[in-house]
Length: 241
Image (cartoon, rainbow, N blue to C red; front, side):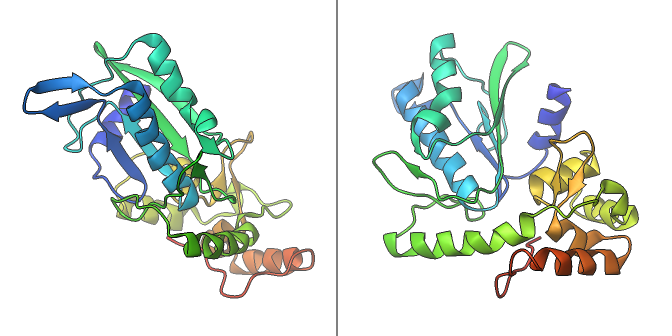
């Protein structure tokens, strides 16, 4: 199953929600593996930038042109790479990771959701994912980002009694077809757009998911009204697709 998922990802271009990272460095004198400390810092830069923005997937062991070159590091170094988001970021970043074998090549796949906190490299800067780039944030923009994330909290709430069956499956299928994503639709909405929680027994839409895809438009509206009794919706709050 992992190999199939990697195959799907390798057909996609780098972008807002997907990045490839090589474990090698290329110089005139030849090719050699990156030092594990250097590679770890590159990993946390991308992952913290994604967490500070809209989330996404990082494949380590893949070149920017999507050729698979693998990770040539020792097992203890690979483990330090996997733990880097917890050891090199403030606050520590929890996320899903997996070691994947494609033939004799090792890859690491990281998946991170958009976070409600602003992460920074310990003792360093905060980053933000924008299309294919992950620039550092100027100090004056960090507080603005924190305030923007508070508005996201409203959209990420999960109304009581809302379930996957409340979504218009035709509309969801139209979206997955339009973006040409072969993954199950609940995974597309969860991992690419953060509209569904798949950590439970059944996929559960959040407020933004209901407002966009509810089978009965009044369901999303009533859920929003009910939720606003407990939390005032921030002005200008919108789900981003």
